[in-house]
Amino acid sequence: MLTSRLKETITIILKSQDYITVKEIAEGVGVSTRTILRELNDVQNWLEEKKVILEIKKGSGLSLRLDDTARAQLIRELYIEDSEIIYTPADRQIIIRAQLLQFNEPTKLYTLAYLLHVTESTVGADIVSLEPWFLQYNIDIIKRPGLGIMLDGDEISKRKAI
View 1 (cartoon, rainbow, N blue to C red):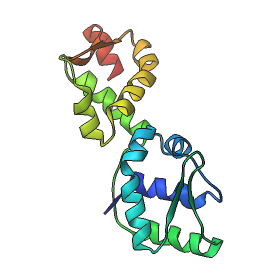
View 2 (view 1 turned 30 degrees about the vertical axis):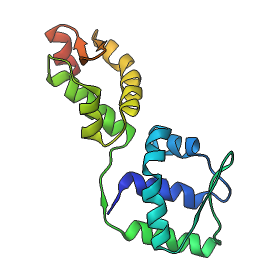
View 3 (view 1 turned 90 degrees about the vertical axis):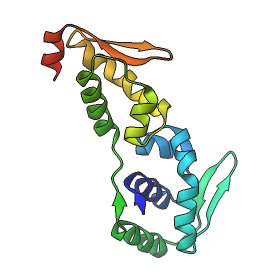
């Protein structure tokens, strides 16, 4: 079964008429390039099942040599398939906020990465994006190497944030 993120990745590749870089795909999906690289085998496997070859050219990126009719057919097949839900960047940030506000002890990055099905670097980028949101409630994000991440703020500020 494909994940919603894999479907989105394949769709971006299918809609690209020329070579597309892993970085461009990652930006389109809202994850790190490392996440895209980790899931590239699953993308290739799905395409191979459909008798389509994913061309990977160092320095250029990824490409599919298909006509518009074949691309449209693959997109239809892709949307028909069942998928497991993978969170968007906005969804991930809501879940991270809730998780951090829920506990008074540090939360490990790998715990959040496992929960959200992304890499620790993706979670780290999401946390950096969340810092201004927490600051508006006078809450600081404390990063303790080896221990995890926790919030520093009084109970009233945390309740307002919730």
